[in-house]
Image (cartoon, rainbow, N blue to C red; front, side, top):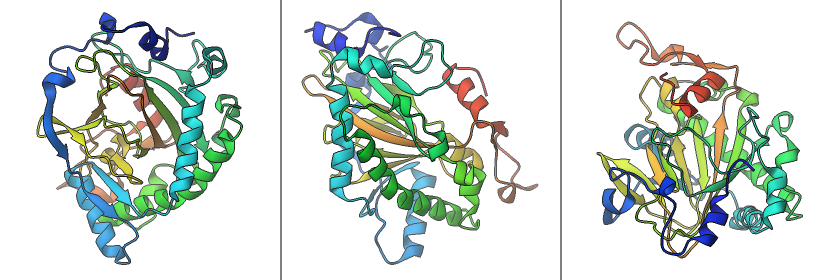
Length: 333
């Protein structure tokens, strides 16, 4: 076991938390959150027959917010509920069964059941356990990290992916057109058919001191786009003008994050969203982000059609795998 799981720590502490989970004052959510105001990030109805309007709204939200929510996205609510249900059931399994899917010690892959993901400057830890595995494309899937229990786990994930393709296609098309590119060009620039869908299930157990801890520390996503299924317990926060706000939960909506690779490709026109997650005292929170990732050996930089003498590249071109290694290990890019 890489270290003690937060789920186990949560069951042994009643009024305090270990020092490693206590954030510094400039991070503590009780101090740094703007209370009483939920952030109304743009909500976009992607079933609107006016495609130009949808494209414009998605591009505007990606420029101004780096985050938006989509509704009427075509994924049936029962498919999402089943997908959430099998993930929840995995984390309710006995600990020894969950450990069968643990990340191999010293392994380079991010896939598997685990607790700590990235190096933190002050050595602090997030109040979260997680399960990572790829869900698309088939050659990239490693089924050793797909739980065999609950029995419907694979079926529920495959059904969700089947519907997710339509959302992915719509997002890339709108984001491409919003930059004046052909509708297929951004998708091709991040790998085309080799674009990987990496699922992360976040499990945030009840925390005795939610005022002091964070689930996931403030960050931007490394990938191109993140498509997130939240649950109804508030916890996602975004930074706006230097302040932290809760993002309003909308039933059946998907939360979309612009990631670092999309900011790089757009040469800064789209903004990667700075966000974090908080925890609660008496309830378990979960979330299900899918990160749309380029192949690790694919070099990503500002799109050639978006740079010229007047608009020089603002970002380096770098292989995605190298970019991730540097970011996770706090090595300057």
